[in-house]
Image (cartoon, rainbow, N blue to C red):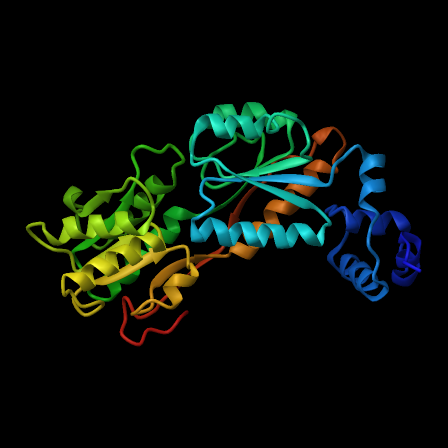
Length: 341
């Protein structure tokens, strides 16, 4: 016979209400109590009756995830982690791709044509902050990335300025002085590229180096082919760089490919650093130095914010603006025999 919620409460020595709060992902439970309840759930093999729970609460147990690109290694890995963490809450995740299109983002914010979602996690590339904020009161919403929802929705993001500064500072510490940047995106309004460019420039100025426009390359997308194209332009310039900070690992891998094609040795003649810590960079030759956001924590914190909002009466939980940690992982593309740190 399957265990009931009351069985779990008795095993954990708490009330049935506390067990319900843990199952629903409420933040109103201490970490110690949550762990005790989770251990009881695991020991008894308790599984909540999703249909009954949704019927009583007027919820579906379904949340939406809107990301710009399904084929992006970064967003693919993040989506996988979000699904994994959502399953711990007995939630089903519907994933959609916006391609950074404003109308696609609006459609998903409106409920995808029919209100079947309890809430939405979205990484917006097109819509302005004001429009996102206007949507927030009607839909439990968590934003991933740089868009500022003006305190009307939860946001989970990485400090791109600090992370880019750290990557560029590392290149400077390796003795590089002609450091190029690949990844500016003037056609997008999400702010990510601007923030990473700001961090890159800040590090150069602090080292007494004036950023040079000819060393900053715009791209049409964040993928390998654009990284290769931009690298070719830099190598064909009057003064080739001795280092590159790419705004994504895919761009960095494309740049590394072009350097190899042109006979430029990495890292001896050209050091390359990326951003995202995707799996490909751990198996490239040489392995890729990168900024590694804590993607697991991004998933966990985004889902906790969404749970707090979904289970709050009248959606009255104050909006959170969370900055997720990152670290610089030093590998062979900037230091021969480089060790991760």
